[in-house]
Image (cartoon, rainbow, N blue to C red):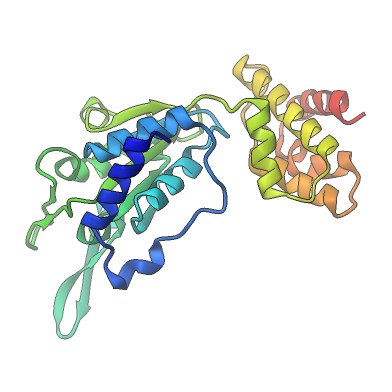
Length: 284
């Protein structure tokens, strides 16, 4: 990373110390993000006070980047995994009866606002647009959350939002223009083979070089077929590939391990056979 960014990160950390009550939320991620250009772009945007939207296909490192950014800035992390039933209460908080009175039980967005955390909004395009509309004031120049019946919650100056989204997942929808305009959008490129090997080696350090190269080759083959529309994105699963690699290190046959981690995720028989043929080219 550029020296000037490193200096500014240090200044940011010193300017905004973390409250002792949430110190446990500041944790070093187990995997380091690979991609200096993207990392520098994201750090620059966050230092300028921007919120960022990481978009791209599967296994492009969106969540790894988000976790690494929070660690670099030394901020507590609050995660929101969006789904079709996510509502404003999930994000901001709900009423709870405590000490003889009704109080706001703060959700992850409100907690990030209070403690200056990094709130990671995972798969933001899974939520209904009216659910995330409550965050508009927090994401723009107003930087506050207006909760009906309570006082406004001002945003801590160190608080940032990092949203992620995949293309083409079932249940996803188009983000509305008002929401997208509040983010700096970073398109995540597909990781090249050498970076995927490095990532898998970090996850499964005792895997053989041969199996690492074959698994990465298979992943890239499947991703190419998914991009061309020949198969769905179900078998393009780096987590499944990692699980298969771990099974191989335990002595399981490669084809059996790949079936458990990748191939068996195809529930359509025609697609299953297509994926099986691709697997055979790498694991004959």
